[in-house]
Amino acid sequence: MTTNDGPPTAGERIRRIAGAALPLYLTMIAASAGALVDTAVLGHHGTASLAGLGVTMAVFGPATAAIAGAQRGVMPFVTEHQDDPRKLLTVLRNSMWLAVATGGLGALAVAGVPLIARLGGVPDETVDGLGYFPLLLALDTLTVALSTTAASALIGLGRSRVVMRSGLAGTATAVVLSLLLVGGPGPLPALGLNGAGIAMLASGLISAGVAQVALRRVPQLDGQPLRLGRPQPAEVLGLARVGIPLAATVLIKFAVLGVLAFSAARIGTEDAAVHSVAVSLVNLVFTAAVAVGQAVIPVVADRLKEEDLPGVRAGVGSGLVVAAGAVLLLATVLTVLRGPVLEVFSSDPQVRTGLVDLLPLVLAATLADALQALFGFGLIGVRRTLPSMLCFATGYGVLAFAAGPAAAYGGLTALWTTLACVNLALVAAQGWCFRRYSAIAVAGQSVPAAA
Image (tube, rainbow, N blue to C red; front, side, top):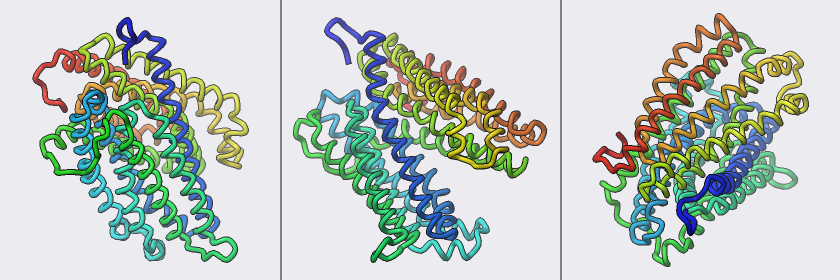
């Protein structure tokens, strides 16, 4: 996006990024709140149902997060070709084939939850109580792939408010159907875990439907019909070269955060509870950085198309300003309101005291994580995601090995200090990679898109 006098000013970039990020943040927070409703309703229905939810979500969560990561790689291609309906249509069709591939793999993993659970030593009572829930969520995984594809394209076209409407419609559907189907108020039958699965699948269908319809109506397509069409393997592979390293990065982060959770659990029950709540607070704050990062991708891709290296770097710089501001604002709110906020998460005064003591370190680690993530999103914008994945794999690989000894000898303080230090190192590594590969991308050197 340019002004009549040239590239956008810093103020214009910041307003554009913030304006696009806010609807995305609200969408993700609403989805998180809806997930809490599902958990609460199933918890009141029965412990076995809640256990089944946890087992299935342990696979469904990483699978859908990886799919979302893969589809974010579509955004810069969409932004590049937004003024060429024919090429834009080709990109969108190939992105849908990528969604079919990643969604299909994710669906197979979710459908295999009963087998995975038995191999993992989950009690037979829990596995037998899963019912059709894994199959319903396997179908939902496919709808998430289609929904995320459309959402990524809409963000790339600067239509994040449409994405918000799609997400809110799906969340509202999930909440209403969960309340009606799980416990069965009045004359309605109580479907338990199967009812939650139906609610989640319906939510995914609504969200995907709204997003896909909105995508087909964008003026940039100039009335051309958006159908799946015949796959173009080379083009799909080109999208995958950007998206698949993002999916791998997401899975690495899930795996290593799981290692941190186990390390905290070995310290003691109280420390495990403090760590769990701290992670929930991090997710609340870090989501803002993810929203800002997605809003940055079209800004970077737009300047890349114009071969404007200062503009590419300034786009990420503006994103860093917005992300840091959002994280610091949310951190201030959490600090000021820490009493009532922490009471929501725990009634144990010792847990709340531990959280208060740990809060500054948690927020510092989150700020560093937000900044390194913004450089990662900048690398998405210039289509160079493999270096980002390698940085992340190295940093979090070190964290995975260091977490156990840190927790054993220094408790939660040492564990979170280690996490903060790794995140700070990633800020430097990701920043260096962005500076190098943004120059390569703008110069148009013959380097593979994932190099």
